[in-house]
Length: 159
Image (tube, rainbow, N blue to C red):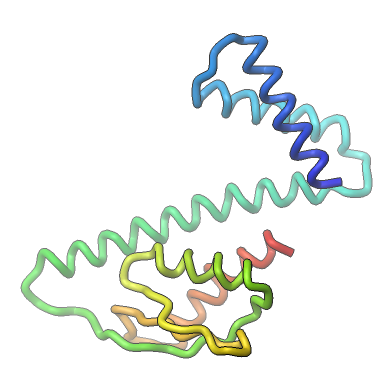
């Protein structure tokens, strides 16, 4: 049902673009938002509204991750431009709640996209991930930031 709503949303977006005659990024965005709203109004009394909740979670997670990435970029840029080393590098072991290959791969990519962090290894049984961090002043806080900031929202979207 969720895939059907997404496909219908895409079809309505394409119809919007054809009617307006403008194939620009802003028009695609406007058409997607309008068709999303129309689908929400039409199906707000249906039992399965997972598509609409996931869409808001994805948008929220996108902006959260963008903010985290900007903060990490500033921190690493400051480290490069100053003569004093403020980093305390280290490798931590993180117990994974992610089970499938797709979940682990997406989590690994999100971690690797954030400057100052890198996934070193995943155990063979896929229960533990080893992450290198440039700033490990508090290992528990670092682990919690990955678990609650990246893994939990990702799993809420994926499951």
